Figure 1 (cartoon, rainbow, N blue to C red):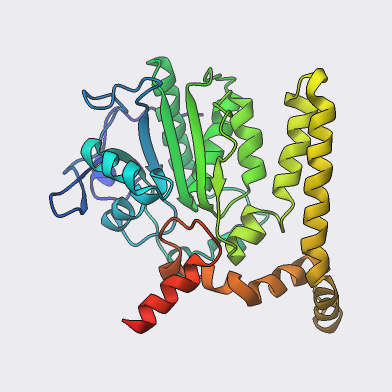
Figure 2 (spheres, rainbow, N blue to C red):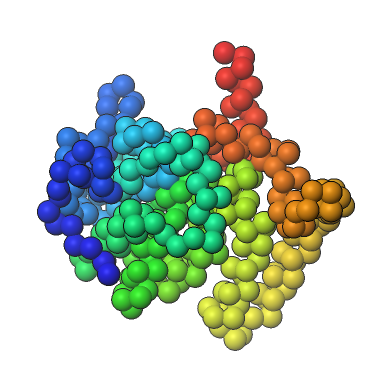
Length: 319
């Protein structure tokens, strides 16, 4: 079921229900939402929603409140590019705000609680509302870029699954970007292809090596390889399969090299504490740079390298 939300109720206005908000930059450079949420995803004079100027929508994961989410998403929508961020300040953007509650979600560790569990009623409602906006944009022929951050990737993925169940095909006019995602990018890849999202961009996800990203987002580093195999089997023309197979083998070797470097330590840890080797490997990696990337205050920004969380920590300490 996809929810039609043309009437925005008090729960959305009071930030207690997922809703779409227009966000604009102030003269001081801060981001502010309009007083009330939008019921329809619509183009504007500055952003007509065509292939040259698509509508840009951010989807938050764990955050404090609406204002925090509104100020956190722009750098991710801009892919860490300052010139793109400047352009975004001129046009504004839309935020699909999903209210967050509870200390686990605020800290970003809800992925552990949710592993192996079905989506909660509140999260399902948010995904249904998001799916409706996607369907509505499609019916208007709009081009849209959806950017999720942290746990927002979960709502985005489930919304696409709902569209797939209804056999909605978007015709390549919409695309997604998972920025510092904390849910499976393999599941997201399956879902985006099922609804015919635009998959032409080679870089459609970005993540610092935090525990949430590694365990839930990257499936212990195997997600990228699984995406490649799925693309080979279901989405590669027969005359291009040899080249694709070679690329997959190369990726597999690289993944093996990375795994082997920590393998012996992980096996020792697993045998000592009764853990699975896969989980122990994740913990070994988490003792390095991953622990910094798992600190909420250090992963709000767009990270172009695994050293970014460390740089932010040093800045915090020195100031």
